[in-house]
Length: 159
Image (cartoon, rainbow, N blue to C red; front, side, top):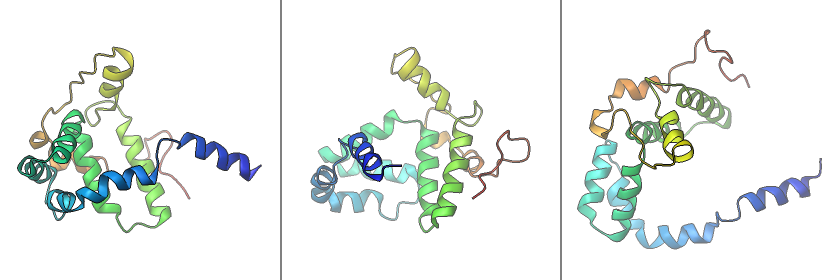
């Protein structure tokens, strides 16, 4: 294949994701980010810290978090913590496993509900289950990191 064409396609697809624009938002808010996210014990701790921070940046992040599936927020935080030092192979296997659990219907995932709310009914009013962060148990979160098992049609990712 033509490496130049692949590079051009990637650059075009990533057009709006400019590192400079991320720096423009992150750099002036670095101390608030550290206060709100640094050494937080839980997603609920992060929300409490953002509420206490009170800045426009904190309110914006808080608004974005509140629109997301509480389960997905907790699973994402757990994934960051678990895989912070993962090798590339470990990261691929973990991400594949997470994607498979996230796309399964209830009781584990809000994925289908998010699709319904945004793409099907377009009401932008997902009914997350559970609806609040504090109602998402650690046991539920752990389920997203469990091996897929022999009954899974594709099985675990083999690299």
